[in-house]
Image 1 (cartoon, rainbow, N blue to C red):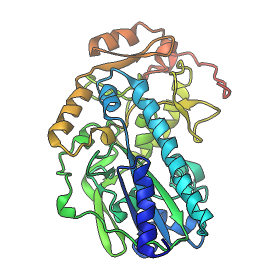
Image 2 (spheres, rainbow, N blue to C red):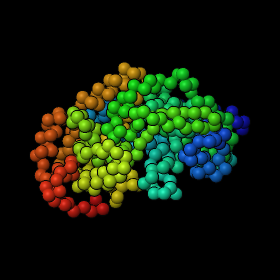
Image 3 (cartoon, rainbow, N blue to C red):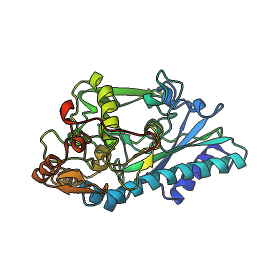
Length: 365
C-alpha cells in the first residue's frame, strides 16, 4: 500500500465506502498555477497531495425545500452533511497521520482566511473545495461556478484531505461529457444576480483551463443566501426568507445593503434550527433560505426545469410571531406585511424612516 497509485486508490475507496458519490486526487503539480486558494501548503506545510470528495444531499428534502413545503428538513440535512463531510475528512487525515503521513482534514465550510485585507469578511476560503474537485475529476464546473457531479448535479457537499503522502493524481472528467448546457436556470433562480450573464472566469491549474460565469460581489450572496431578503422582483415568489428589502443592482451598493439588512432584520423572531456563522454579530444564527443555484442543478434538464417550476410557483414566504415560516400567495403575503405595525414592517421591508421608530437591539440576542 506504499506506492503512489495504491495509496491514492485506498484514499478514494475509504471515502466511497463511507458515502461519497465521487472522489479524486490532486497534487501540487496538477494544481500548479492555480489561484491562492489552491495552495495546499497554506493549510499544511510540506503537503504534496489533496484527496477531494463529494457527499450528496437528500433529493427528497431538496424537493420539499424548493416547493416551500418544508424548510427544516433540507436545512438539517445540509448542516449535518457539512459536519459529516468535515468528520470524514478528519477520519482519513487521522488514518494517514497514523501511518506516517502528516495530514489535515479541511472543514467543509465556514472557514475563511484571516490574512486578507478585510480578514474574515473577505470570505476567502483556506482552500477552494470546488477547484480541488474539478482538477481531480470529482465533477465539472457548471455555468454557475458550482461543482457539478455526474450523479447528483450540484447538490453535494465537498470535502478534502491535504496530506504529505505522495499520491498519484486522477484526471479531470472529460469536458465533452459535461452535462451543463448553459440552460441558465441557475441565474434565473438567483435573486442576487451573483453570476455575470456575459463574462466568464477562467482558472488554469496544472496547464488545464476551467471556465464558469464570472461572479460579481459576494455580498450579493451574503444578502440573499444569508436570509436577510429574498423576494423576486416580480413579487410572485421568494426564497425561504420572509424579508423583502430591495436588492441593489450595482456591486458597490451591496456592502451597505448587507449591513442594513443585518441590522434591520435583527428584531425578527428567531427561526427554529439554523447554524452559527463567525461573521454574524453576537451569537445570532443563520438559516438556510436559498442555495437555489445549487439545488436546481440536476444532470437531467427536464428535472432542472421541474425544480425551477417548483421554486417559482410555490409562493412567497412570510414569518409569524412565533418565528415559523409559511409560504402563501403573493396577495396574502402583501396583506400579511401590510397588517404589521410600522416598527414590525421595518424588520422585513424598506419603510420611511419616520414610519419606523428605532428598535433597541442587543448583541446578546
